[in-house]
Length: 66
Image (tube, rainbow, N blue to C red; front, side, top):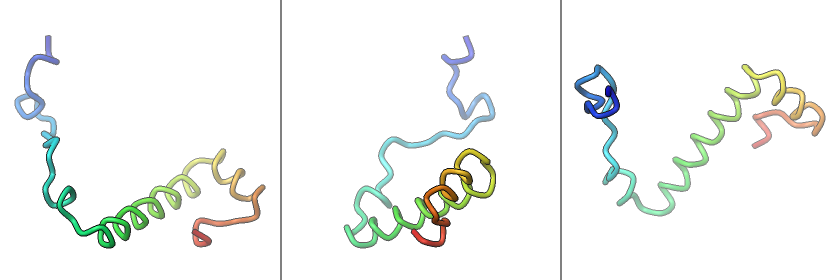
């Protein structure tokens, strides 16, 4: 089966389970990165998914409020 073949051999990406650049990151820097990624995800959902845009509008907020 194809799942037995490593992703890199199937043309997929290989993602290490241990990523020292994140695992060893100082706590304040990690918090900044997490907030940055959260904001990007929320903006994407707001702009691309009508359900989430409606929920934000019902709450009277925009992604920029985060």
